[in-house]
Amino acid sequence: MPDYVVVGGDRRPQSSEGKLVAFIVRWLITAAAVWVAAKLVGGIHLEGWRSTLLVALILGLLNAYLKPLLVVGTFPALIMTLGVFLVFINTALLALTAWISGKFDSIHFAIDGFWAAFFGAIIISVVSFFISLIVKPGKVARSVAR
Image 1 (cartoon, rainbow, N blue to C red):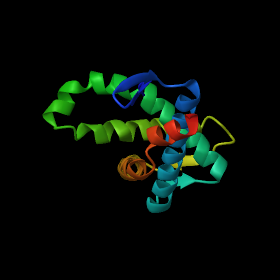
Image 2: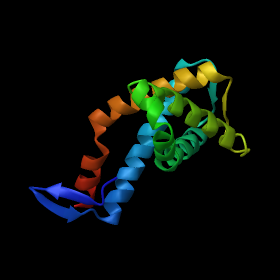
Image 3: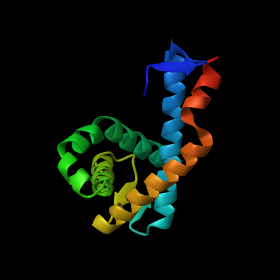
Image 4: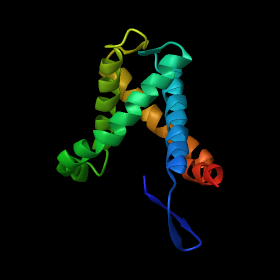
């Protein structure tokens, strides 16, 4: 997430309010994508809106902080597979999200196995991509921060 916004060729610092709004919009997009994956994949079990939001938060934090390390660490595999290995990284992060969620009694989220995590990761990626094309978190943040 850049710390600046380009406005008419000008680089202006993005406000902390704008960053917060963009984060919340991305979080809600991830929550919607997780919910869709749970509805479409029989091996993903998710109960309630609170669990959905908390799972999306955990997954978003893992994507923000752990995924870049995994991408750098598996760079040769990513090059050899022309980026297809990213699906396995996303699968691992979704499985890790389920494991972390299982440590909290208030989060009702479980994944039955590898294939459920695999297809769930694909669905979450695709749904997030398409919702982000429509909603555009950065644009929403700029319009709210004005």
